Length: 173
Image (cartoon, rainbow, N blue to C red):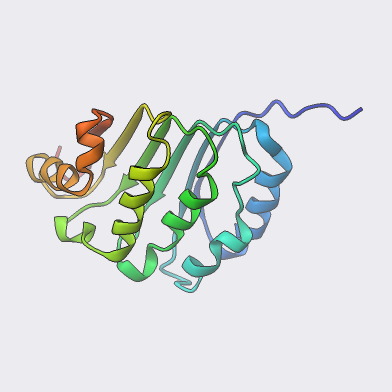
């Protein structure tokens, strides 16, 4: 009889293309018991990876996932498709906490079709289970404007009182 895995929390600060397949295999082998995942990707060396990441990393089997922390270092439109792809993989999961960690320098970075897709996912999925969406702000946009842009981008999260923005910016200290 196999021993059930006991690893419940995993963090990958920066997944590069060369590591994506191994990370995906590891997460799949963990099975449904994974509860907390932090994952970040850097695409500056290989932008094509943004479109193929979900072929390597599939979170659909991690059915007990409750907290997902996405380190989003690259906000250019062409580098963002991995975010809604990852979120779509866990639509069936009872996610309670989502933490996008983002380098926001200008609110217009949140105006794109990809962000529209992310908003649509958050408006449709996890309405009953999501207790908080915590934006970890790391950019140089002052908090007054940062809060205003996020409130504009996610009005339904503000209305449901689940959106929080935390200042983690080294620029604003």
